Figure 1 (cartoon, helix red, strand yellow):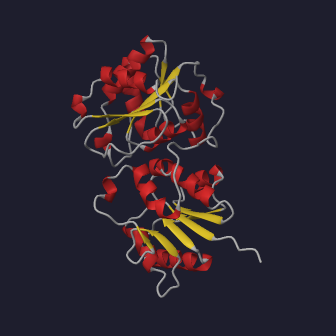
Figure 2: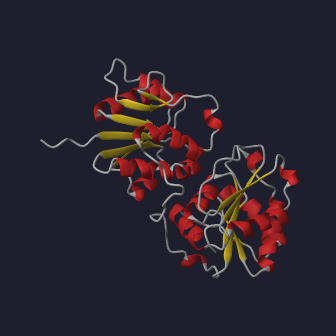
Figure 3: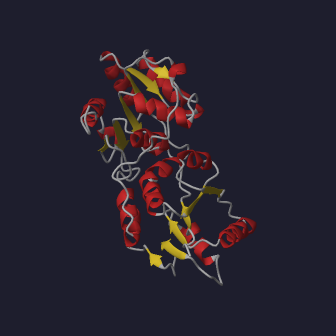
Length: 312
């Protein structure tokens, strides 16, 4: 009698950038469970991307509502699917609770930080470990080894409508609305844009509608800059990253996507965020404790070095 496929759940509720930082773990789990049914529990905003990736047989949506009814709905979902194993890659208080919601059992094998997990991944300083190293440690007991860099070959789109020249670079001067402290000053991005334009490289500013003011600041110093804020879908951002000469951005989701695709990327960090989380074959983290200590010349030089990584 043939063995039935296992029912496997991966939990990842993190923000946009976290989704791309988890790609190597997703792919490694998929390989390990090639013959099993693999389900992802993620945010509604990330579910379309997860389906596009082709890595999962099913994608469930969790809006992270804090109401009792929402928690009971999650409990019903987990129990109805009767998962054999759960990889909790979110591993935070909320998803620890999901393990407890299965009371009185039975419980699946559970990898994560929940107390009572069959494969606990609790240790001091866990949140300060680089994200890929954290996943390597968590998945090692199962013989699962994430790749060094992600494969985002599924994320692409035609970018002809933007009318960009062959040599263009992406600038990501924004951040999530609640974290303006993660933004290197727009005037510094303007200086980078001007330096790139002097080389014949057209700067293209990426962001949402709320970052149009940053694009205007950059254009005042560098009229050659192209404003693409609020004009790109996620697949189009992947297409731009795949073809760009290089990119400079803050610690924010679009920057991590661009780096993960393989674009030569410099991620600018201050102590406002932890400078350990970025992934890609040609990414450099440019960190100083204070943004005031980061000049544009140093960032441009770092971008030149990023272009030498993994070939040019």
